Length: 121
Image (cartoon, rainbow, N blue to C red; front, side):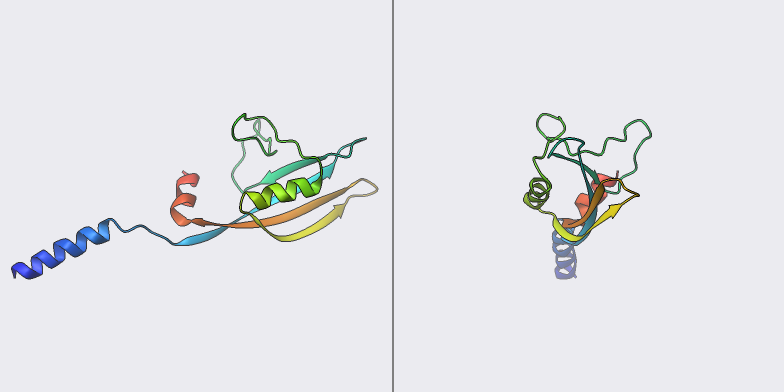
């Protein structure tokens, strides 16, 4: 009986400290649009989070300074996403009327399920 209780206590304590290592994929959309009279591009990113009406700025910001990150080209933005661990899934251009083409890129990245749940709170 004592052995059984000791076994249950040890098993319960080991199980209590185990970490959930389940990984889930998260997706984001990067939208690139050329600037008027410039070779640079404007990049907007949609991570799927809810946005408030007055805080709709979806541009990528530098984590240190908080300023909007400027990209020299579309390839510069794609390389940045790759350096952050995102993998491209799909890409396609959309042209509305005679306006400029807007490029849409879809990326995915694997996260621990715990990280995703914390970010949603």
